[in-house]
Image (cartoon, rainbow, N blue to C red; front, side, top):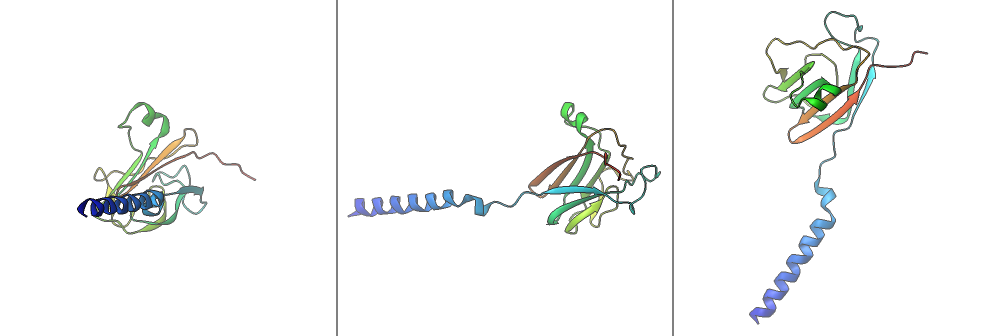
Length: 148
């Protein structure tokens, strides 16, 4: 009898493991999806404050723990590329669905005290690195746009 009970237990365990494996996508969080657009109201590219009229948007509200913008070509050759803008949570950020480049974010502070966002130019490709807890997002963008 005990042998039969062990076999039933093993079969049940295999069925549960199979069900979890087949439905593993349901247990995963959706990745952070990012888009960007240029805003005329956000400043000008020649603005000395470094704030470009650039808006980043996400598909849902996210409590970000880190925002970093670097030049994409630099990060390919240097793991610790110079960030043009880097904010970290202080200690917890307010959930947001979007933000302007260089803006002060509620619940976040510059990684280096007193640091400001550097001005972006329309030449290179930039990389936005977002972290929200254990989730990470990488988004490449540039400032080229066609004018009507």
